[in-house]
View (cartoon, rainbow, N blue to C red):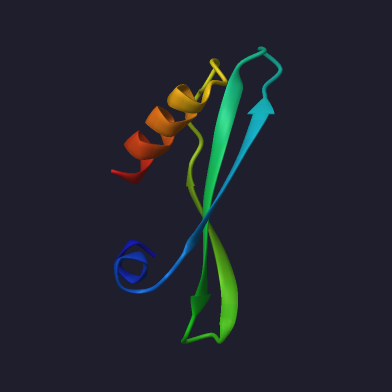
Length: 67
């Protein structure tokens, strides 16, 4: 999916989840149209721990995951 994200539009989906150990994880997914299968495909990117829910912290985790 990395190669197609470089050449086609894609959307990012982010959501937070809390584990049983009270850690907050940021779920990052990418969604784009797959021209081969002719359907919208959603792929898992990363799930880093993000215990501080500020915009700066979420952006930092997102930027790190995308690089």
